[in-house]
Image: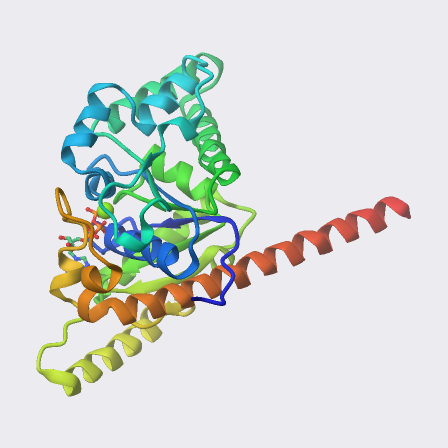
Length: 321
Ligand SMILES: Nc1ncnc2c1ncn2[C@@H]1O[C@H](COP(=O)(O)OP(=O)(O)OP(=O)(O)O)[C@@H](O)[C@H]1O
Ligand SMILES: [Mg+2]
């Protein structure tokens, strides 16, 4: 059992580039936290492709929730635009397809394919009082507060972001105590992280990107011709990362391109299997990654608490003077 204490916090798996492993990494981290730390985790699906929702609930259950307007985006629309009193918590569902160690601990706040339409309706509901930019900002801030409200009932909130910038990823950026950036080992993917830096600087002007970044997870590292080639590839990734931008805060180990991770988000109608079976040859690596992730989250939250304590002291002193 892990001795690392994961702090109660909201983390977002984000990268504006598509297909970088956000959902795969988010689910692996979430299941790893359940397995190693026995925390109650909720994954928020901010992507209208609904990959995380399909993986954890199965298509049939998700389609049923969509038909009944019982997804996260429907709730936010009625809460923000129509002032309904239903709590976001009431749309959280227990995961049906997760590793056996995560049963009862792992939860999902499902998204729906209607999210793009719902986000326009949410923004429109703020328009009578403000211009389009202010309406967008207000909506994102309120949605972010809603996401954070789940900390009242869960130990850990992990947001699976969509590719690109949407109202839901804006809300995730506002809600997050920290971010984890899944990336592929190539230059185009690293360049996308600079775009992310710029957008986060705009959306969170008070928190420097480096204070939010828990780490970059490099995934789909090919192990083509045995260990020598793998080592060479890893060394070239590190040279590339050094060159492209400093301070990626790489989380290790890197995740390999492998069959188990390729299939990790496809689980519909699958019987419950153990963590070791789900992640196969990569299960040890995923566990080490989760430990490293948890310890970085702990350090980040401790730094933040320290800084806000110091800020309070300075304000108190200034007041007393
Ligand atoms: N380590 C890996 N090895 C092999 N295949 C992988 C690995 N990680 C992810 N994949 C596969 O790559 C594809 C993209 O992964 P995933 O859906 O996690 O990315 P994403 O960033 O969430 O995508 P999107 O931007 O569309 O939300 C999926 O088919 C997934 O199964
Ligand atoms: Mg995804």
